[in-house]
Length: 428
Image 1 (cartoon, helix red, strand yellow):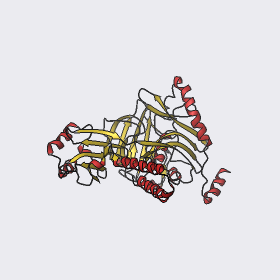
Image 2 (cartoon, rainbow, N blue to C red; image 1 turned 180 degrees about the vertical axis):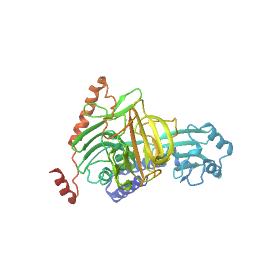
Image 3 (cartoon, one colour; image 1 turned 45 degrees about the horizontal axis):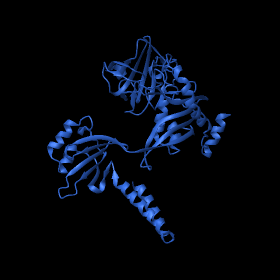
Image 4 (cartoon, rainbow, N blue to C red; image 1 turned 90 degrees about the horizontal axis):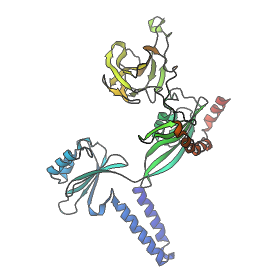
């Protein structure tokens, strides 16, 4: 809103400088436009703020909905009614510290709260109307979507390549999720490239509200190009997946790794020798991913937790049975988030990186079973998800045609001078 008013002030000031040169009809039109803008600015969340005494604040430590209402002269029976009758719409126990809220009070001497507005996030909000019979409902601010393109060449990491261009960090996260099954983000190469098409969200045309899902992408990893297009494969269930230019599903039954970001620190190696043990062969049947303590560990596939315990050198760990063929295990956790018997979905957080058991640093040892035998997950040809149904493919190819042309026409930004020579050497 500050940005909007700033624009209005500048416009009107410029108009006033030219006032003597303007005809009466033009002056009248400017005055009418100004009135309209003022009315728009005074109306928020569907209420005319000029009708109320307005209090704007954020939830602080120790605040509760009941105390906020009592301090604004709302009677306890009304507070109790909201707590009991509107749990599904507004759970008063779940207001969070730091969240903005607005209280619209009466303009009479009592200044009693008439309306409470809680902002769940930059777009969604909840209204508790305390006038007459109490009503609670959810609503959304008007959002404008603006398409944006981004591209880059990786010199250090994907996140740096994106942040250097001033792009929302969530785009990094979204891109890693699109390619989570097909690109090993722990083994990115200098010179890998990406292009992405997505939408940015704006409230009131000027307030940034985040990046939307990726609509189309291109990732060139180790010289291998991989296209990705978002497409609804089941209109009845609103299921959206990402497919390549041949309508193959990019999703696999298993994620490539149990972390979104980190470092591959030790591979599966049956002939590993350790100096500490007299250089004797000590097989390593896991794949280690190093990351800071507290980093979330993800289930790499759907399945049932068959163990969530602590034992010997494994420390705290979780084991998941995915089907009759596959099982996975995650060792050295700081803490588990799931219990034995729980069903988890691919990508669910099941625990956090720690240093329990025999470990010299914070990491997760990821173990992978196939038919009861531990194998190297990085060498396994993981089962693929079903491709797009043939009946849907003609419409799909028609849909992705313009998007593919758009990706192909995008150019990469020039790297800094000190990196050009390195990339030139790399490509020779």
